[in-house]
Length: 385
Ligand SMILES: Cc1ncc(COP(=O)(O)O)c(C=O)c1O
Image 1 (cartoon, rainbow, N blue to C red):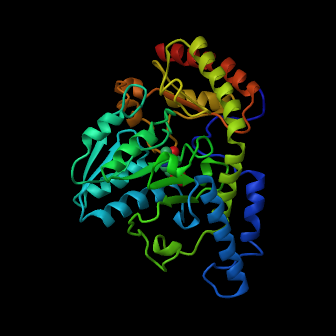
Image 2: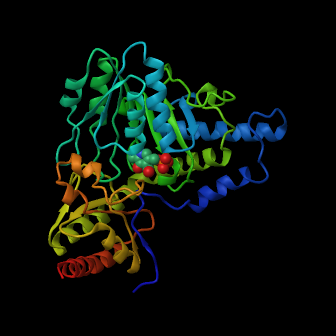
Image 3: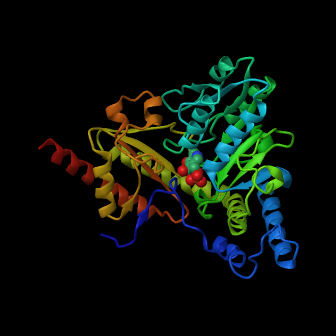
């Protein structure tokens, strides 16, 4: 057994890169000022925020004033959905989203229903794809907002977002996208995607936990969740997390610079893993689209196994992965994403997700292909007793 941990749970979180940590460090220590302070220390922190804003905007091909720094993906999703819906409530109270969104989006939408909004949760096909025609069929005269994720965290499927957003905008619907899993992996040009609001989180792209951003297209109405002291141009009160914003911007910039080369490398490793698992482990099915999927994302159902027991076995063998989403407590519930793909509850409890990252090597993949068939076989025979 190798003593190196094979970490294949990058969709849950990633380590902070050394170059990101180094860029953040001064803003914890020497340049610790409050960006709102008038003195030099404040001015330096303010400058760091504006530099980070411009850097993040550069990756999104947006204007710096359209970037709002937040505490992460969950806050950005909530600010986008609740903030935009509240601002638009006089125009209409219908919101569209999909059945496979992250809890950050689903719960923000559910909160809106308690404020008198009506929410439609759009179905997906067996690969997790949203059909643009079904989206348009669901649009009503009172539809004000749609939230459609760019790529799914559990099954890796990438949505035809640009096509959906273009159609929605002809009907005057504001379009938000949770691009947390797409960060670092896909093109985030907000004009090409055609979105009004876009969520990113730093800790999925080798930045710090507790830092995120919301892109807000100029002119998009948004009610702040925390008005507070009016920071972030009144869209998000609270003293800015300066190191977090710097870390996010640097991580995003580095990811964009390395994206093309890293995508090819990850896709090659991912395909080796998917093909190997399908070949060597009986009773395994790929979940999510075979081609329209995130470069480092492999997900399966493993017939007849207890997902949690398998994760524990793999952990003992030095392989860290997940059953689908790390963001849910109570892993015994079947995954809402796998259910939405049409899988029966007993199968939707057997998800296995392996997500690759910058440090993943071919030797890691080959080790998984060596360990996994035996682990699954042992569990199956054990459970049969
Ligand atoms: C698709 C998606 N949206 C939102 C989030 C929440 O982001 P954060 O952990 O930064 O709140 C996550 C991560 O857990 C995610 O995968």
